[in-house]
Length: 264
Image (cartoon, rainbow, N blue to C red; front, side, top):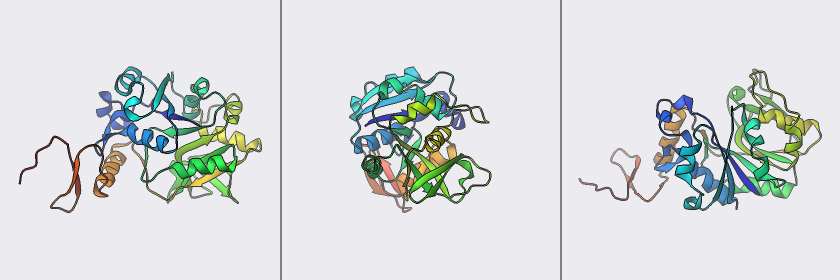
């Protein structure tokens, strides 16, 4: 199985910081955002990864190189004139070929390993498995209607959700996805939606499954969520990088760099 990471966004919701540093390279709790994605994919046994980039192409290549620093083998493809997640996936067809692959949104972080969902996908023999999480207000997400362990309908950002299950940023696909992408049409907002592509699979009778996620999931695309993610990782005592963890007098965990000097 191969990995695809979508990292072509401009990060406009994090301006002005992302005018200078691409969103996927921003540090969260002492680690570059994309490192968390690499770590999750390696945990699934995936080392061949394609990163979809945009205008940030050269900066991304300069920083990430061939991926050896992170224990992965990286390929880059550029998404021209972005028009949605399914549009971005289309640029990776030559890399993926006829292999199964996992699609990972570059600004998503999870508080636990995702390997069990890769195992669920491979053992089930289904054509597509999507990570979903029950949320209080699903209207901001793609929503999965689940019946008897199958996803029977997907709706992108519905005004009146029929299900509490939000699509949570991780998708496993078999080769049938390429057959439906050629028939995909833009949504009302002018984008080629990955949820619409999966709905075409459902309409064609494919076996589409949910992977129910019960942990903490963050989308770091806004300043509020970016800061919330950083706060969660540090307050939970998650140590990132080569620094040392200490308990601050106010009862919160902080990260001290490896070369830092702490004086009382």
